[in-house]
Length: 255
Image (cartoon, rainbow, N blue to C red; front, side, top):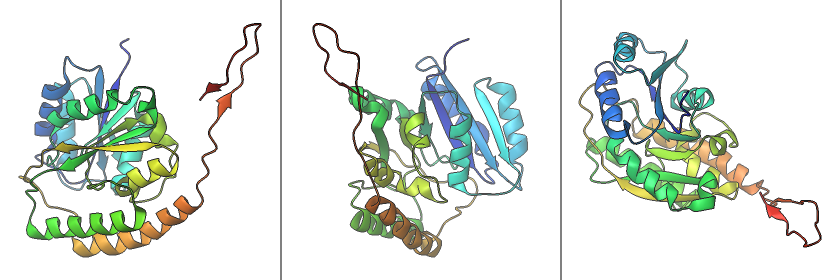
């Protein structure tokens, strides 16, 4: 059995009409370049998303589908997908097709530049030429500005759904609702590093946005207080494995 290198995790809620086109784009971007799987997580959709997912599975053997019995939010969808993933590396995309799967190889190239540091590195998309409505652009600008000022995560677009990281890195993070918006700060808290890569942004052609200014900002302020508390309690000791000494002597092995 071929070892899975990359798992593409896509949380979605009521995305009828987006499922098959998005899977077609993932296949076009990754087939033949990666040993990959796609995991679409249906977060309690009430429209025809489930039927779309069944149809997509019939066409694409690389697609796995998980379904939440009740709507639990985007962070819960990502977590379910990552926990079920077989890949060493995780790429995430929003289910509304505003992220372009063709950008994943650019994130992968940036990750490979990190060498031995790659397992402790988050590559975050930075959306260019936002094509959202004015309200969504405003809410994102406000949210990113508040996060950057208070968390100092040096990430211009931490809310971008397009991210790439090691599965083990994610599973080491503290989990809470909405955590997907704060991953750069959480990675840095544990001594990891983040890099941003410019990516494309597209119009939403099908369905409706689930977010606005108020539900992003006020919930985000509460979450930021929690993340700042986590930052203040961080402990990164650095660990060396001590190997048996030989006649030539051995230096400690960093882990």
